[in-house]
Length: 407
Image (cartoon, rainbow, N blue to C red; front, side, top):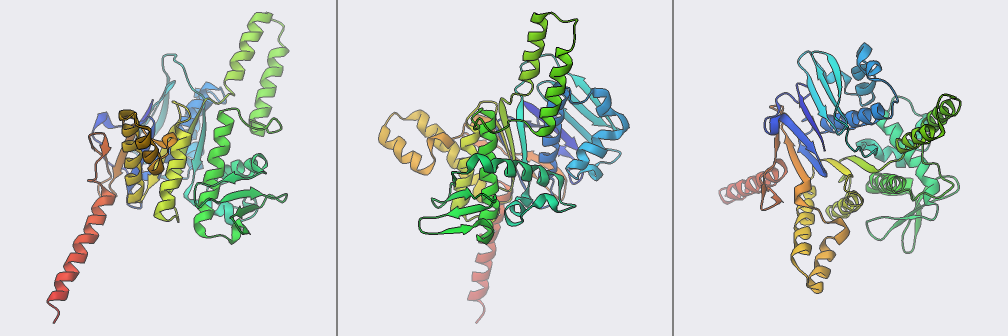
């Protein structure tokens, strides 16, 4: 399980005061809060640091390379456009399965942890700007967009050949197919339209659905045989490494075999870290529930999968609560009729264990992070999002009282 401690980074000043300051990334981790409170900052840090850990294990670069010339800030945090969030008091500590990384006093230090099993993850950051992937052709030709958006676009473009026969969407019984020109076509019962002509909700929904399923297929090794599992950069690096080994004459056949097996294992993904900004983006509440269940389904495919969500929507927390409650009901009852009715609310493949969920609330005024408590395993309804729903009710009551005195 990875964990992350952060303070004095961008809007995050005091950070988390419980759990020795560490945010846990085990199972499903959700961040809620106002704009500018630091939700995406935490998600981007986790994405970057978990990728760095994987790169160090795979020997994409050395510890010395990473820590010199302020590359952590200027190269890797700059990729997520948060390099200017650091200041003289910034502190970041990441503890993964294989490495500990600490940024303090303007310097990054790296410590290799005791050897343990490491599940090589496929890591995807799904940016809030993903709707541009659907609405703009050849996004890769446009300059100065956020770097993670280009990476996401590449995965989306690669996925098209895998889903030529179409992919079912989790909403409204619709399907999306890709024509020979690579254009996404939205297919209903009695109509077909180009995705660029569809509503904004589909512009956000389709790329998220397609990339999530595509990367899950990579992890499960279910891609069609004609489809490459590696990026071109990874393929070149793997080929060059193998050639160097084969050209060595100081290795026995047995040692060479073990070395090749080890290299192969570092290019085999065993888990999926899916980091999603605002899954509710432009979606009706019922569609929010369906896309959330969809994400839960793929999260549940492997015990080492991780799902990270940032959200402004109170529905997301409420639908997460449904998935947790449904899990407990499936475990408690053996009555098939009850299980069938529960699955109509939350499909069994999408239910969630409460012990694998952490919800954090960020405050833009204080820079604090708090972990939400739970009640009998369910997320507390005393949270930032629900409090604003209560505020609406209170304001409406005030208007009713004023109405009574208006005449």
